[in-house]
Length: 59
Image 1 (cartoon, rainbow, N blue to C red):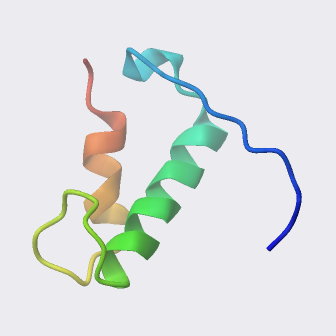
Image 2 (cartoon, rainbow, N blue to C red):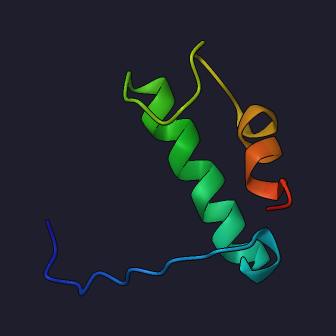
C-alpha cells in the first residue's frame, strides 16, 4: 500500500469524461468483474469491449 492521495471525481455526463479517465474506468471494471467483484457485469469474464459500452453511453 502507498501513501498516495486519492482523487475522487463525479461526472454527470459522459461528455465530461476524458479519454484517459474512460480508459482507466474500463480497466477497473474489467479487473473488478474478472476478480469476482460486483461492477455491474453479470457474466464474467469480460474484456474492454464489454465494459466500453456503458463507459461511452450518453447520459
